[in-house]
Image 1 (tube, rainbow, N blue to C red):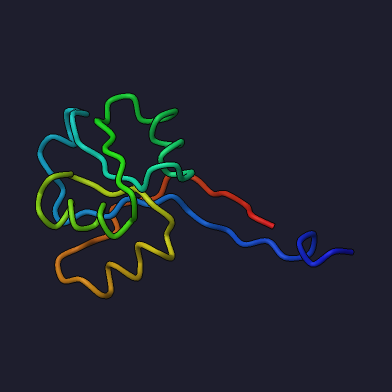
Image 2: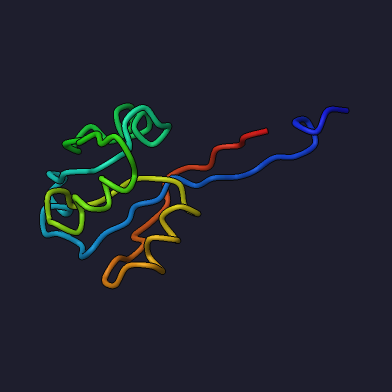
Length: 102
């Protein structure tokens, strides 16, 4: 058996927020993602009410959140947990789906 067949890592698409914006209740919100990632694809396919803004890196998406340019950032749970721990005022707001990688 190959190692890739034995090992599976689970990544959860997660929202990171500075504060829950009032626009989230109406479905009109801006979501930051790293362009070309599964989070980008998920947002495009499953969040029709979101205005999705793609960034070259997750660092830039987080910076946009901190500056108020986006309401949420969608990304992998382990990555966003790092930013939540490392940055004051950011909170994991919820999870959307699980992906298995081998």
